[in-house]
Image (tube, rainbow, N blue to C red; front, side):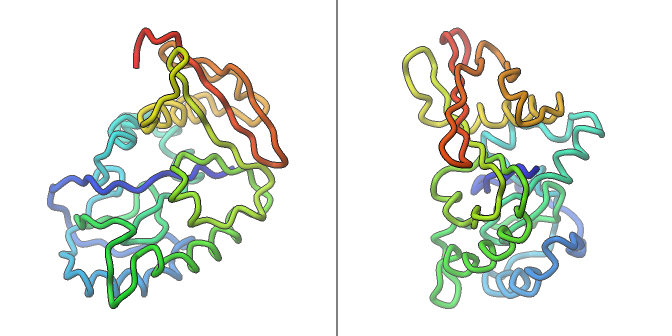
Length: 218
């Protein structure tokens, strides 16, 4: 299985050390990463991605405090989007570089710059696997999900109101799944704060997991 995790424009300003890119899954992307580093004049002061990214999802995930076996499952099963790196691991070295998919280099937006690479590589990585999407619609569109066996998405309701910004909820959902090491047929066990799974809707290979709370917490 794979967990697809979102990018973050909000980033830590902490300085880091120089590191080499080393994840074999994404090695073919590194020449293009170096091209972008030159294009945007990025300082090669790297932190692990989970420390560099600072939006609500990454702050709520709190990867740095998770038990080592849980960290290992997230690291091994996750693919993280980055306008600078294309695809990365949660522990990939990441410089401070506030970019989004509309930022341009040599007349191309970063979405255009990476789209073919991300589609090709995701098609290879996801073949025959269950893919859990923790990204929004825009970032989902960067992937080729055609070879995945199942695609799982999540929708959240607070009482009768659909949650408009569910990044925090997605982080808690991911933590619960990984901490309990849940399989596809165990999604009804997800339970955080007063959010519980109300139903799972299946359409083709796409599963929508609907979670609802009584509105007592977030």
